[in-house]
Image (cartoon, rainbow, N blue to C red; front, top):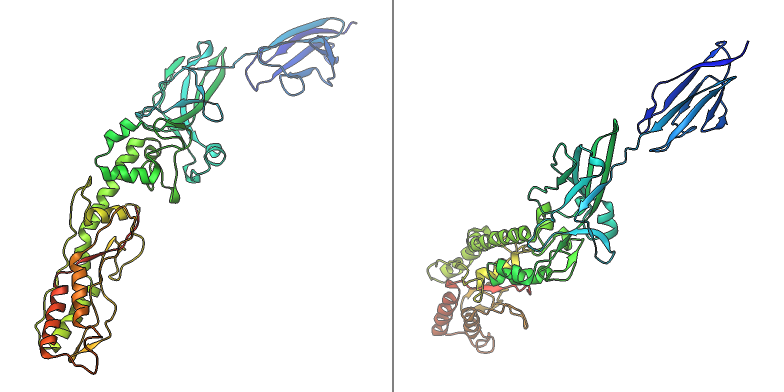
Length: 449
């Protein structure tokens, strides 16, 4: 009796990615062991079943293998691995940009996201995904100044089907690594493909940014903070992959703190936020004199001064804290505007009244350790401080004259212990001292801008 192969059974003749086929030989007599060949080469097998498509007998994409069971006769079956590769074409293609000549698109200086169409090869109709990733490569290897907190993936909506899409960023302005993917079915098998490119930013043109500044003060702040740059690239149209970060993770043209994604990549959003911050500082500066006047420390100073007057037989007086002088934000900066400029990045420190340390302070003199004619004063109003070369120089003539008047009244050389002050001199000194502090002036604590 001759041993023969009576038939071959296979669970699948077309393999999708990661699939295997099981081939089984039927023989006569039933327990006869066949010899297996794959593409004409004999392979070892201890049974009448063989697995095709795995690690032992792989089948590459688009390839076909011939599996044979051999006894006195031969029966065979063909198994094919389906080609499921999907290529995505980006139109227009990204260009080689930047010092690394990376394939990239560019956020325009307007700003606007690039117009990109993604096309899937082979006419696949599937589900698309569009993401912009800010990953460790961007943060730690290319843009080392970007805080790690920016590592994220932003997904944008995409059509559910179709062989091509126009990428819609939904009005957002964001840079990083663009990743476009599609999932569908090719030859009955799940298939996917993807492509991507960098999205870099463009610094605004001089003309665009000049038209966007509401006043000269904001322009000067932008120059000081960033050189009018949103990205680490030359001003006036320079292209860079990295937003311009400063200290404490401030970013962009106005060095905005706690910036949103939009404020990091969109210079107009960054500028708008900077203007909002400056307006907030103007409001805070406007309210500062009233805060000082209501503080317990200031009330104690006034009470102490009036106590001295009452002890000397003079009535108590009301001491008012004037509001800051005001000008405009282009060519007439006064106390209010200067104080807001100081506060743009924060009023660091604390004044003697328990408030933030502003550009201008109530001037309180150190103790005048001089007793004259039966009464003693321990305070005066300090003249303002100025610094040569500062962009903002202000001096209070009233305060300066008041100090001179007090020192004339209490001069040690004219009124020594051996030469008591006359009643006439005493009254004149009291009048000068009282008039010098009735209207409080502000002193300048300069922070050069």
